[in-house]
Length: 353
Image 1 (tube, rainbow, N blue to C red):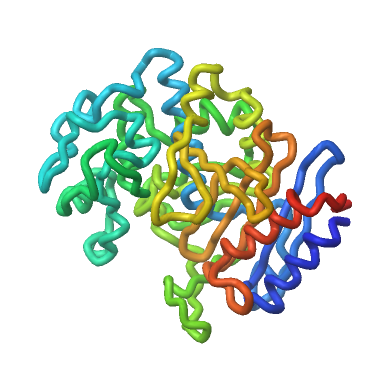
Image 2 (image 1 turned 90 degrees about the horizontal axis):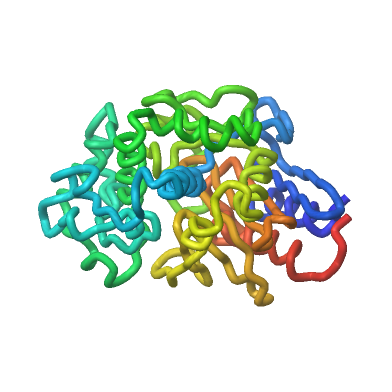
């Protein structure tokens, strides 16, 4: 039993007010899974290791891995411009696809406006094709010239997904399955097709306050969600165990050749994002309050927030998920809970189990 981490999970529910939370730890001593709260507030069902949940922006790590595999096969180059693969797609209001490389998409130094910053426009449409999402972004000026700064943009990964499909002639979901999930046996991990709003297999309800920070804000059931709105930027579904296997393989150098591995882990400082982070190609590092640095990715989407981080070699990993998108009491949001969880696991020096 990992008593310190279990106490934190219990506090996340009792003090933070989250519906339910799970954490799974894997290291040289084995595996520990813990939970608190519920998967369903109506039935009281507890959360389980088999539960699938939306992983939000952790999708980006899968997409970047596919792109880097294609680069290793010389089917594309990270120095190729967006215009070389998607002619004329990035233009207007100061956007110039001929000046933006694939690398700048993957590390968020493109300057391209993030379509999710214009939710009013996105929500006007029932069907969210990648082209539509890019069109929403192109209606706004870029944040800066390519390479001049850093800004998190979901449009970058919509474009990266489109380039994967153009380079391979296959759907992005099929490329992720072919290159990552099937070889690693990630049976609970997939990118939904089209606008499929369901989560296949066992899953918790996903509760959302629709980004309203008020403690008494109304809670909605966001389990069914139009995943096409997020696609390559945040549409995937997974489990704690699958995320462990994926990041253990990725961090351990078993998914990418050395040259592409070095590219992925070449980081730049972030700005106006998560504090104390740096960003590579679909991967990020977090420096914890104790000074330890962990590697992985996090994801936030309506009703589900996740963190999957560990040591640089992937031998000690922690995956945490909350089936809600808020936290009260000592925490401003679930990221505060996650930071405390990683501080507990990586900084105390006390064996957890």
